[in-house]
Image (cartoon, rainbow, N blue to C red; front, top):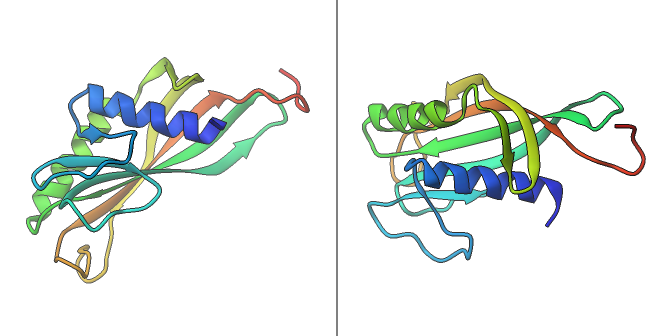
Length: 149
């Protein structure tokens, strides 16, 4: 797998091990009532989802990079549900340091920003479920034959 995929699957596995949600690396379907952990694309079901994606932030020419980890959460019609799910992710990830996710060495991770999404009122249009996004900065090692250590 590539570096981003290793990082994402490592974070997904870690969140599952912390009891925040369920990660199915094989892509099998989630059941109603489960909190799914998925990569890149928010599925229509189940109601409770944690969707992970990376995006570039900064590279200084060495193996040390900072990438953004977008954590998009969705829950039921009560806005407190998505806030609680976001808090569970925060409790598991913010301030984490000196760990390895899927072979990616992470020196530290912290939440940079967060906001309730607004589709009206922070809900998805499909089922009137509340959504939120939080952005974490991940400082990690990304070896490359073209950059210095």
